[in-house]
Image (cartoon, rainbow, N blue to C red; front, side):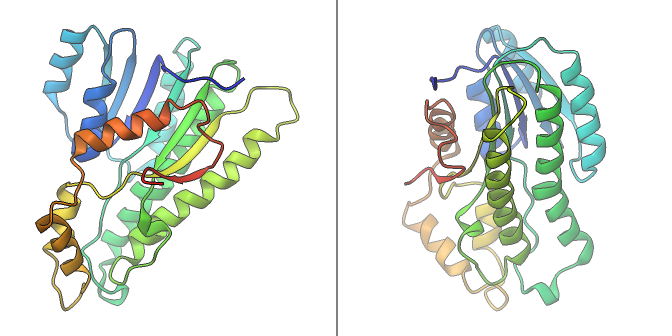
Length: 255
């Protein structure tokens, strides 16, 4: 029977900036253990966890080395007690907005590793390590409308988000059609709307000759049509807790 969720264990990537930090702040609640993974440490989260009586594990980690990150997560989960648990794959990079032919190979590779390879390997580690828990387990992949609508000058980011959507569909099929009698996990790739983050600053400030849609992103900001990270985080966490989470493996917070 489906029910609303109040997870006791949450793993969150990209926890130091933008939507990820807003999610981390709202997830730090008494009785919950948050594993926050980010490239940069945020001491203010430690203070907030102590104030609220939450457990916080914070890893400073570069997800560009996805196999190492997945191995570390698997080892850590093996030492945790069974509980209702969530993995939120939020971390992402944006290459310089420009045609693919002008992209730098190292930058394009990093976008794919952090935004797609890491979520896939972390999800695999999470599903394996928690498979015998018998608890409510959920994977939330933070996707984007650009995974469903192509945009010139953003080929790598579009590929990452489209990949998140489709691997979520495949895993949803796997977990719902298990033959071993174990309780499957639920997974959703969720587009969180257009949020006022550093990524938006990068998009609206891009060279218009190489990224014409920069004008559209500038208009979104000028017209006040961007959601704050705090409000977006509230809406994402409300969706995560829904009883029908996973009924549609690809979803949009706006629809």
